[in-house]
Image 1 (spheres, helix red, strand yellow):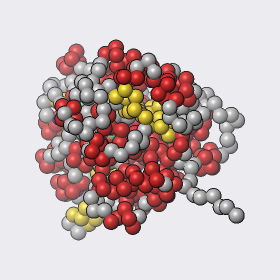
Image 2 (image 1 turned 45 degrees about the vertical axis):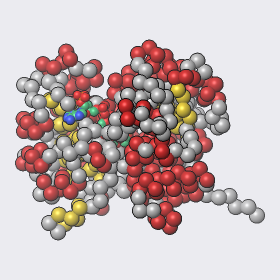
Image 3 (image 1 turned 180 degrees about the vertical axis):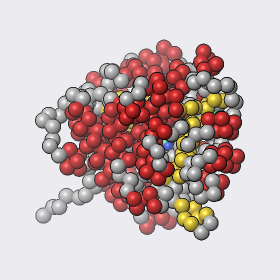
Image 4 (image 1 turned 180 degrees about the horizontal axis):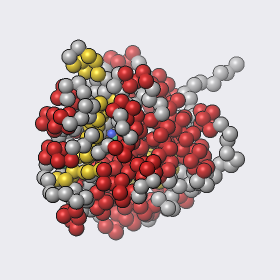
Length: 496
Ligand SMILES: NC(=O)C1=CN([C@@H]2O[C@H](COP(=O)(O)OP(=O)(O)OC[C@H]3O[C@@H](n4cnc5c(N)ncnc54)[C@H](OP(=O)(O)O)[C@@H]3O)[C@@H](O)[C@H]2O)C=CC1
Ligand SMILES: CC(=O)C(=O)O
Ligand SMILES: [Mg+2]
């Protein structure tokens, strides 16, 4: 840590940690686990975003497996080149929507590598059982195509049948090589592929889309926890999203599902509490014909509104959620408006990395005159306002996916079910105790994450057994203890 702390520039810390991960993996994980709050912003958002942007020029050795269009017809052979035979979790991207930074092509590899480092450090999945994969179908990022250090295919993205065929070959090869119980986590695909891939493979493979499903579980947990501060039940709140893509509609759907289950109301009804704004304005029924499939359920009756501020004034949400990938969109006027009709507005600025956050923590607290309950996708330091210190929480799927994946792995689950997401979410919400509420936090600190992950894993595994989706039989009696016993720890053996 002393060495890492010598570096002033976060990207240099990232590079030093990458070298450490390659040189002494056990020490890397020991550092990460013991200093999780300090190192998370380096191996994960925001620094991992910068690392992906500059990936070509900081590249040393491949840390994951690249599968390119050139390998069409040979994907199984390529998979067999990976030296580990037992793989439990794959995180795969095609690099088209890296955080809120857009299409970074092959340079998106930093994301699967970073996510899997968290699978090990936060969720205890053995490093050797983690496989980062980037599928290289080209990039539409002109700057990268012209960059002499770009490491990927120098061509525009392929789409349509060629794309679908490569993905299909990949999905079959993974199952053939690693069996039915390997978890495939889709990460940072653009939404025009993400929803289709999830829909296509969720009945045949153990697949999980972190941006749609993991984000949904973490946000639902934060909102449920926040209700203890704000008051009211979930069904009494009104939600407005800026951004109606994977994160926005994924969260909206899980909230609607939870309200539906709690109030025994059809989900078609509970969706009416939730409104979304996209780049064209409020999603309303008059736009229905031109909307992408995943937005259609959110097209409620309302006159068209083309901007967020007017939507806030018209809808009067109690919860405002940013999932647009565009920074500084929660302006002073927007935050003042939402604070004018809420004693304690709940404001979540989910977009990553920090540069894309809809507002800063300081802006949220200052413009709401210290009344906002605020959390963000990338971390912000505590803020002092009017002599009081406010500690913003981090609303990031990193709270969910490591424990969620561990739960699937230890139960030998063969499919993901929405009820497992609700189970993970409930478990996380239950970890927020009074001492955190007093600081305004709606998530527990990451320093407790391994314990939290073990509880999430146990809850998810319990649900897998209940649903008949678990294959590890008999069911362990104490699932928390069992989860803990399965977790990798970076300790050295004692030799006599
Ligand atoms: N905190 C967390 O754990 C997570 C955070 N994220 C972050 O959320 C962001 C979005 O991700 P994701 O949902 O996958 O992305 P998508 O591309 O799927 O969705 C983005 C949405 O934002 C809308 N949008 C874009 N620009 C504007 C604008 N100027 N005004 C209003 N709406 C706009 C888009 O509109 P249109 O449809 O019209 O193009 C689209 O609906 C990213 O920054 C990502 O890092 C994602 C997952 C997890
Ligand atoms: C956190 C995450 O998954 C994202 O920003 O895409
Ligand atoms: Mg993501």
